[in-house]
Each structure stands twice: as C-alpha cells, then as structure tokens.
Amino acid sequence: MPIDPSAISRVLCQSLVAAPPLVGHLPEADQFDCGALEIPEHLAPLNLEQKLGHITEAGLALLLEASLRYELLAQNLQIQKDAHTTIGELDFLIQDLESGERIHLEIATKFYLAVPRASGHDFPGPDARDNYLKKLHRLRSHQLQLSARYQNYFPEAYRNCSIVSRQLIHGCLFDHVYSTELAKAEFIDSNCRRGRWLTIDQVPKHFAVGTRYELIPKPLWPAPLPLLDGMDLEPWSPNAPVDRCVLVRVQGEALPFFIAPNGFPQIP
Image (cartoon, rainbow, N blue to C red):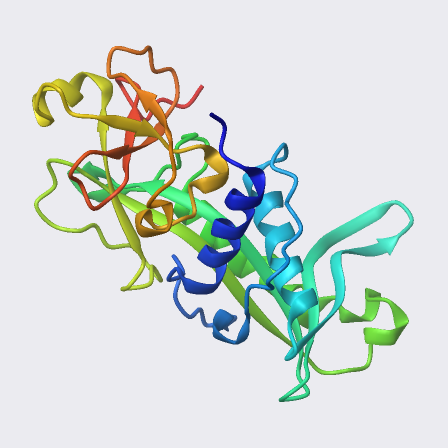
C-alpha cells in the first residue's frame, strides 16, 4: 500500500527541524538554526511529484509561514540585471522578528558517497555528475554572494536594508562498507547524518542470505531512519537490476544504505 503523502510530508518537515545539517558553518554564511521552527498541527500535503530539492523548499516554506519568529518575505526571488539577464535567485528572503535581521537563506538537500582514492576521497552524488566539492564551490562563490554583490538589483523594498546570508544544507554522507574510518571533507558538519554504500555485486558478500531490504522512496531520503519507524516500505530484492543508486533500509542496521550500480561512479 502506498504511503500516505500527508505522512511523508510530516516526516520531511520533521527532518528539516530535527536532522543535523550536512554542511557546517561557512566563512560566507553560518548555518540557519531550525530550532525555532515548529511543525504545525495541520500540515498541508506537499507535492511529491517534483524534484526532491523543490519538495524540501516547499516544506521549509510551510514551516516559515507557520512560524511566530520568522516572516517569509519572498521565495525563489529572481535577481535580474535587466530584462534579459538573470544573475541568480534567492531561495528565501525572511525577516527574523526577534533580532530584526533580514536573512537571505539558501537551502539544499544533498547526498554524497565517499569513494576511496589513493589521494583521499571523491564525493559524487547518487548521480555522479553531482559532486560535493563542486556544489560547495558554487554555494560559496555565487549563491551566498548574491545579497552582498547584487543587492542594488533587488526589488526596491530590499535594496537599502542590511541583509545577512545563511545556509541550510541537509542530507547524508555515505561511507563505503569496507572503509575502516569515516571520510572527511571540507566544511562537512561533524554531526552530520551518516550512511553506508556498496555496489550491487557486493550485497551478497556483505549481508547474510535472507536479509530483508526495503526501498526508501526519494521524498523520504532526507529522513533519519528513526522517523521511518512504523512505515510500511516497499520490499527490495538484491536480484533486481540496478542502473542507478537506490536507498534501502536494511534489517538490523541502524544506518541507511545506498546500493550503487557496478562500476560506480561512472559519469554518463
């Protein structure tokens, strides 16, 4: 039986409030503290038929709209130099009603698999075209610089006020099952969520015969496993063909596992 979209929406919003961020404080922007956000009793279901990043943004928008501390001033605010040139987009512009600060907030939900190399680790995403270091560079060099460099192109109401930048990068870092120590990467939060990954041909070597696997649907990827307790997830078989990374809950394991295609990471 499919999981109730309302239940998925609530778990996703709970994850935004309670799960540790993937990225720590950056020189360009501190983490945004979600501790002041609360889950409203009546939560509108999210549209789960869109990309995960958009689902997460919609979830945070619901929390901000319900917050007594923050006022949501703008979402997906286009910054245009002229009618033909878009410089970028602010995920959120919000007002902290306690401190008086106006905040430019960038949000993302990301998952990276630590691939051991002789010189250290690579950090591709489940789609290997994504990469942690590339994402970090764009975040620091462009997205978090928009309010500092281009405020004169903001809507007139926000051009001459003080704006600070914050970031909220949720997700999980997956170490290979045969790694003997946790991978480290620049600015990864020391308390971030962790998982494990392995290729499909390594599954029968690593897990016992008869192990139960359950597929975690993509809208629930951001959720720590304890938030999935009681959810009836779809069974997954290690005999199923794997042409992309799938996330599974494994019987008896406290961490989620990405099962990757053989030869991962291959960039198409």
